[in-house]
Image (cartoon, rainbow, N blue to C red; front, top):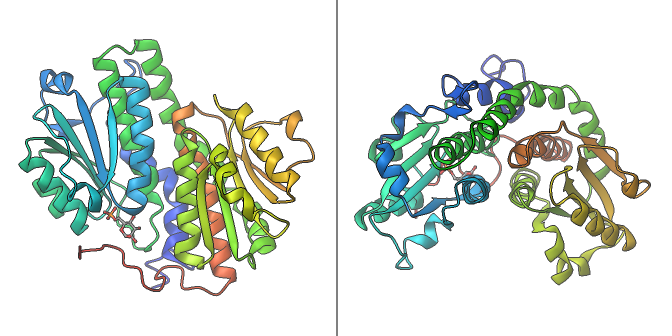
Amino acid sequence: AQIERGGYPHFMLKEIFEQPTTVENTMRGRLILEEGFSKLGGLNIPKEELLAVDNIIITACGTSWHSALIGEMMIEELCRIPVEVEYASEFRYRNPIVTPRTLCIVISQSGETADTLAAMREAKRRGARTLGLVNVVGSTIAREDDGGIYLHAGPEIGVASTKAFTSQVVALALFTLKLARLRDMSVERGRELAQALAKLPEQIQSILDRAGEIEEVAEEFKRASNFLYLGRGYNFPAALEGALKLKEISYIHAEGYPAAEMKHGPIALIDEMMPVVCIAPHDSVFDKITSNIQEVKARKGKIIAITTRDEPSLAGKLDYEFRVPETVDLLTPILASIPLQLLAYYIAVKRGCNVDQPRNLAKSVTVE
Ligand code: G6P
């Protein structure tokens, strides 16, 4: 087993450390840097039809639902098409609005999740065109969708999804790039996004090289019984995903929240016992999140911040700070999620949990 794990103590850690390569593999042969464009051979949708799409529904479960939320923001921002994200298990039962001009994007690592598969079939039955973002080649969703983008992240064994998540976000960015460029994105902006994507593998590596810093933070907080994760914009879903990772493998109660919404509830829980993970890259909502950080600090919460720059307004406010490299706003959740995966992993290991096979969870949920 040690050999299968490539010398790592757990599959999850191996999969976290594989991400420079898996993200690269998701982009391989698909990114055209000079033209600021992406080539997605499996989409199987003629250009005219893609341009005629007037709404997009993204459906998924679990971690894949979190990447869907990031995809929604990317597509709406850059393609200006309305997008809705639905839990697959809800979508099926609520008479959703689907027309022949609806594109239904289905995200699933395994390609076998029962609710996601049923949601895709339902969308199809109502006339939507379906596009699968799937990791497992030849899985049921991959066989039944109209077109797809394989993640090419390789087998994911750890029950808690890590490398599939980052590859899903990359695949969504490739799709957004393509659609936006077919619509009205300039070649310059296309190139900027393509170049930012191309830089991700080395940026992820530079974070992994400092995993030891996160292990120290984990040592400090391993006994906490609650955690709050805050983010805004593209990093609100990253906050949800960070909290989910911690819950899944360490059994610590954790909640992800849009940072400002904290005022409407979770702020009541903050005291000196509450670690608050704040995802605060220097993006378009940075100023807003710094004020949320001050609100947490004023209530003596312990702040673990993921930042990208030195920020005078935060001096003395952060109990722990982990710097990630800068990138374009829509890719920041990819870099922010790496330290959060590591944090969940090290805390779970230090608590003696079965990281690769947490209690009550399954890698692929094939019951409805
Ligand atoms: C289970 C797994 C999660 C996964 C979710 C959706 O809950 O434990 O890690 O995110 O299913 O799985 P899928 O294969 O459809 O992405």
